[in-house]
Image (cartoon, rainbow, N blue to C red; front, top):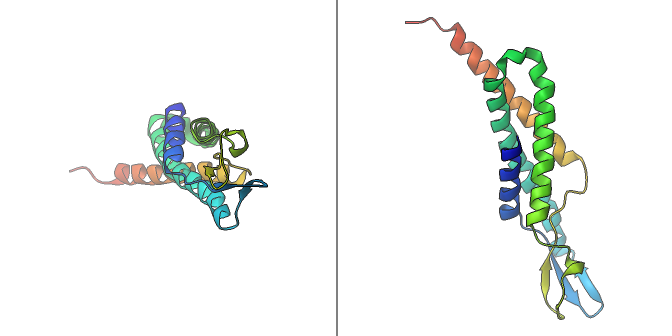
Length: 149
């Protein structure tokens, strides 16, 4: 969970395309056209979380299948924790807050810091983890039902 969370955070930092703030005489401004970058950062986080959680769901299902129904809450907690780790790693590795950047002149563009400003993107992580659990369980049960040759 920790390794996948760190890897997801690194991938998020690499793939995310944050909005650019523009330095003007009045200060640093986020233009309306650039504000879509904030949403794309969140969409990228959700997409990476979906893939990471599917992998984590499949892996935990195979590794901890003896837990039966108790695997479900374990998986939910593991995917949520992986999401939090990914978020923190991405924020740590990503660009700093534009207001903290020094030496800017009028006309410069500064990328936004990576940010997740609500809880809903984190909810996709357990949903896709459970999809991985369900898919792995179904595939595993069909293998057990096949007649042996």
